[in-house]
Length: 427
Ligand code: IMP
Ligand code: MG
Image (cartoon, rainbow, N blue to C red; front, side, top):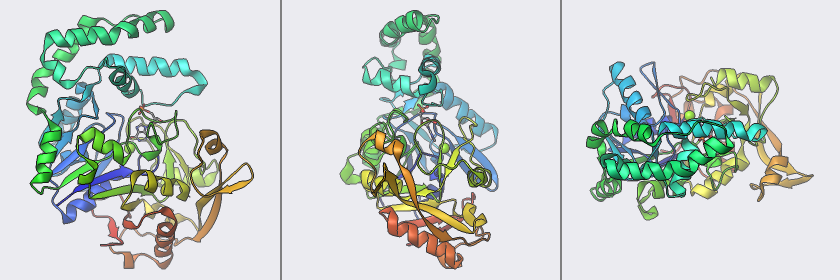
């Protein structure tokens, strides 16, 4: 079968791995592909009660029989890559086959240094990045002074590229930021040290994936970050430095848009965000604390507490639009079992006017106040439900109501962290 995209419809941490798990129950997945971002992601996967976290590796690394692919649009820290692989092996996990694009850009240790220095310099305008060097690595790529994976196998070329990359950076570091210059030789040595172990994994991943699709294999493109963190379509400048939207998947993978069969937007039954930036339905009261606690809303990558708020259907409709979603997968519905009444944001009020679609400007978005509709809670534990009909009537009604206002059908619902804790709404 097909090419399936699974991506985040909100600000990340929607639980994208659960949609992957549900897909894998009906269709054996041949390839799981990451197409953007780097080790700033945080996937939690629970298998037989054991929790695993990956940041750079696709969740497919734990799917037996699937080949994991890190495509050209990803920024790769070889150090993080090996650390994650070794961590899984140390826990006795059988690690699947892994391919890395020769075109992917490399994150070296100096990118993280620059990330942190830049954030400090921004002061109160901080983005709240993960500090992993993602932004600076993409900046080098766009400035055409990036180092790519293929460069690690040619010392002469590598040295030239690192010199070019550090030239302006070092002026900035020493003259503006008052830091020590980064030495070219040290960086070259660091990067060369990864070459031997990397080499057997490196290939033309665009060719690999297109050939797989030609042969009728199933390719799953697993999004990282999310729509509202997209550098073009998110809440700029409070975004990541890549394109997590569906269009970015095609660019990052080297697979054309006409080949994609399904685009699944993963969306939580409420909303969370880490880092700075506008968030209309954010809660500052006891409900927010409860969502945070019951939902275990702590960042997998950085350990930061996530900001929490109610479901925002304006965001959902926007995600449906900019990604061309064919369906949603709704996660963490079980968490809402504690409330008598569940508010859902159906529109915004902006400077006294009701607005039904994502406002055009960032200023308006900063002024947006949620307009809520209220739904009756189900006040019970639904984590054991395995079919839509098993869900209490009020939970079914909540799902149907979200479907009505979110811009795409809801294919499945997550009712707990385990791989099997899902409910199919539309088979
Ligand atoms: P960066 O990606 O490290 O540059 O961080 C930019 C913004 O994106 C920050 O607000 C981060 O908290 C956020 N971010 C990056 N990756 C993720 C993710 O996987 N989940 C949620 N937020 C993320
Ligand atoms: Mg995450």
